[in-house]
Figure 1 (tube, one colour):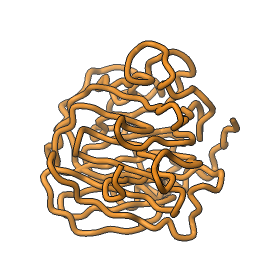
Figure 2 (tube, one colour):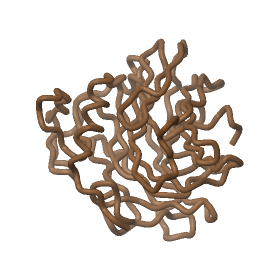
Figure 3 (cartoon, one colour):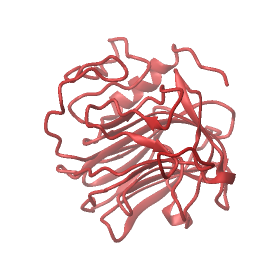
Figure 4 (cartoon, one colour):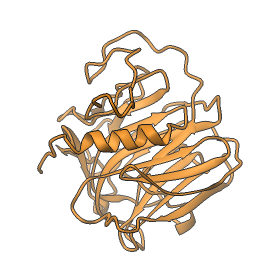
Length: 273
């Protein structure tokens, strides 16, 4: 994928789908719809993301077996391992994650998870959050396209070769993105990293491990994606490494919530391979 189209594993904030209330049900993580994500720093935070009214998709990667990656948002935006429901070399493997289960990706066989789902960004905002442990990628700079929504809607790419993250939002025909230097954070240090990309209608921002890494003005009307991909995208770049806990939201989640999520994770057990 072109360097200008590479996005990093960061929490991406964009007001996304104009979600009506999803079906009443108990999700994979045990939360019920209506449970909120209280990011008040005085309140203990859960280790994993929860589903609230602004959650468009939430994948914990805790299935451990089978071809389906369950969506815990209540919207039914499940993913399949690889391009089809069949077992194939394109399938990432179930593994230990940052908190519970996770997925491991091998770019040599172009592994990714995918789902065909429509998402509407009614408020023209969005957030993408995830945990990733990259070791490289299929791109020139060790690029791995860890999350993509639609053809030109949003994307995140980690680049271990130059220790950067690329984040971008699109209107269906063009991208508005930026390459973010990870600075003192070494993306390929064997640790899990919390990446977030946010878009609030006027500003694109990237966070690495709970802190704002960079931001820039961005005026764009978000395209409405019809597919969601994790770990790579055909004809683009694929990740080498592990992923856990991916949440897509229809709002730009505030800096305080992002910082609280990172802080809470420090007291949570790290799983081993």
